[in-house]
Length: 293
Image (cartoon, rainbow, N blue to C red; front, side, top):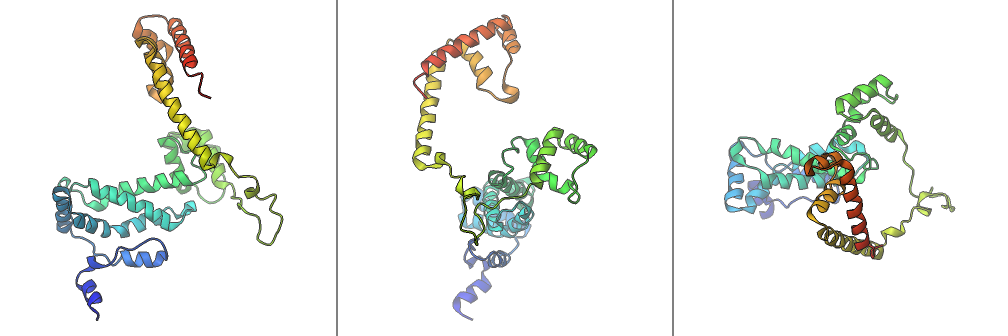
């Protein structure tokens, strides 16, 4: 046995950190060779990291739980994304969990890390899958990740099933139907068949996006910065009441957005008066920002 192999046999932490790039089978085999920590070892390493910022201790916590990430990531293979990418995102979640883990709470890292690993993978799936534009709220995300488990076979949901699922997940019945339709839709190849010279009807021939050019992106980002600064300056020119009305009506979202009647009650005037102040303030702001296209 060589010296290097002997070192690995006596100290499994001396093995090189595996990389997801390359053979996924080799990666899984490598992470499975790292020891599973006992509760005492886990607590000791966690304290070493929290109290002394011992990065070697943090590394052992991460390495010993890489197999957990592989297991969790395997459950998301049905979304058509590479297993290696899912593992990579899950590893980021694991590292976040190790950074925030408190051994004094009496919870094992495996339970604590599960939330962070899944959260990171969820975000990756939503960023990259074709249904991302519909999964914008917490309830819709829940629908996104639970629709497959509720669907039995390839048959479409009945009206009663749609209503029941919508009630259970707190979404609209139309959202359930739309999500189901998107799941059932087939994917189209970006490029045409390899044995055909004419690719004029393949999506790659007409899906080029001029807006994705680096110069266009840079110009757009700079414009957004200028608009943000101009908006801030325009708001500063308003009196306190007008600024409060504009911010409450136009710069908030969801439940935080106030109605004309809410503001009327706050300032002790009619809703019509609030509307008039709002129109006047927006006109003044529009004039102040007129130079930005």
